[in-house]
Image (tube, rainbow, N blue to C red):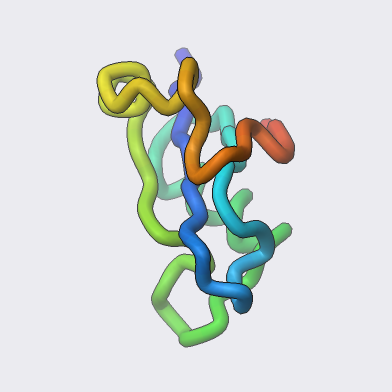
Length: 80
């Protein structure tokens, strides 16, 4: 069974987006990170190019799915 991981962005202009998130569906967190990195490579090796990431339950609990993140919503959905 696949899981969803949500990669969020802050205001730093070096992020691929300011606000919002990328949703990745994968078998596990390791695969999700690999998929994310294939599209949005690390700026610093070993550090994901995003502000934070959440599993589905954490993301729903955050309220971002309803209110958005810094005025933005989902930019892209990626799958394995």
